[in-house]
Length: 117
Length: 115
Image (cartoon, rainbow over all chains, first blue to last red; front, side, top):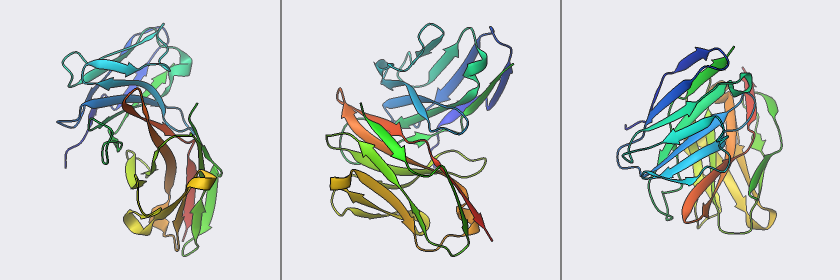
């Protein structure tokens, strides 16, 4: 079964350092999502790509976070500088393009757990 | 703005007890509705989904959910839970925004089932 790949699984860093997460979606999935999940809360959408274009980054803290999906396949989420409050699980998900049935279902990766000290 | 509300943050049940987890959403347009589950140490996975048609949806592992449009609700049910159902359950709502599906999650309900 095809899966969404994410790395690293765990990252510990000190505040003010730079951090990067990588995601490879399921082949053929045009839409890619980055979510942040703080312990005890539901996932919060940070950024959504359709192919290589950002279609929603309204909740992305753009002063320190950036995301790219240059060739419309894999994606990188960067935090610079990291702050204590960034400690969370960063989830990547992908879905099929479009608006019809079976295109609203997201497939999630294992996530990247970030701890900022 | 679209939002999802899950009524219970923590639920503790004994095996064989019945389960109902509440979910309400706020959005006036057409929505797709989902329940995702996250077992300990595992990634989020789809439990069931509603796009259209019969408002009573059956998912994996004996779970079902009923969409009540007039109440903006999509409650999850299981007649008899098992220890292996211990997990966190997330209700999610997807709607078209700018031509793209946007999925919003509730805060989750942590279920503990005791043998």
